[in-house]
Length: 540
Image 1 (cartoon, helix red, strand yellow):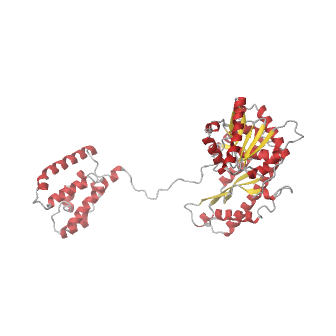
Image 2 (cartoon, helix red, strand yellow):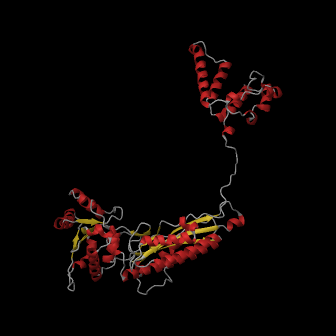
Image 3 (cartoon, rainbow, N blue to C red):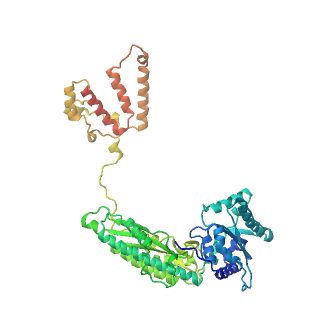
């Protein structure tokens, strides 16, 4: 981890003067909300957000347990005792400053009473902005609320005093801040360049490690997991940056791998075996990032093993498209104009790939990793300017595989309704068939067990092809007939059901009741029910 960086006081005032001047002179449509405000309140910094970007831009480092109020005339810091030792030099008077900007560091002690007094001092400055100018204090809504004790105490203080709405309804000035921080100064470009060199070195480590694992490891080994472990081990040892080419004055303690590398594998070998499976295309998707003194860089690559000619052709064209995009990124072109120019080129040269393009081709890069207010998409009308930095991301996704022949049916069994639905009313044996094959075991239920067994061997399993008939009547009519039969049966047997001397059920009544039970079964089980009934009579 990098050590806390001492704040460059001269750089702080120079950048603060640039920020306030740009705020006053802003005329971009995106700065409308910012121009309507007389102050900006910055809370705790999230990773890769505009709050963090302003902190690093002004102070050269991320500030913890700190709230900042910026107005055109002053800057107020409410911070912990630890951060106060770093920020206190900013409150010293600079004799060479022609225009003095009032800077105050308000220390928030640990004690409850002293902490309340410090927070009340900052709140007084916030309220004074509105009362004196009639304008509001804007906020940056660029992340979820920070779950940190310092911010919890501040929010509780506002709630107890009934001042929650004072900031909850504050205008969002994120777009205006994005306009001001868009162009980078030479130091920011220098630090971003070092971060890019670090990412390039890290990608070479990933590539060599991947090829080494592919040569020595089994195909089923968790290559991605081992590769991530390799990067983590080299980073811990400090050998991961050996051989990287950058300026000699680089601070080794300010280098970091963040976010952790993402490595995914996709193998196209389904349904293959032997040599064919060994030669199947393997695709590794790698995305990694580094940062140097809070300025990030990221690289995404698709590594193909045993790629097919179609994949190689698409990748070569993607590289050409990448060069075209870089050549087209000139000062004065709008973000959406660049987006449409790239899409038009693909639509003309490779129309089959137009639908495979992403919805955005990248975004502005700075301390904020992905500036959503300056994205290279169809809706962003921001104009590109000199000294802006971008993360360009071109890709093709969901490309149809020309070798894919579609799905294969392994079990082609008929699913037609006539093949799975039967009617009990029309399963009565044909008299001619009965003369040829003899009476069925279902009809001849009074035969001896020996005769029943012989009949079961012959035709107890009803031949669905011979006896399957289409219903001449609708299913609703059959259901209505069945209900009427059940009512008649129920009324005719009610006296026996109430007779205390009737303790057993005759064979005919049992057969009749079983028939009604089977009538309510699903059609596909009706023939099975007949078979089970006949089998039961043989066993008895």
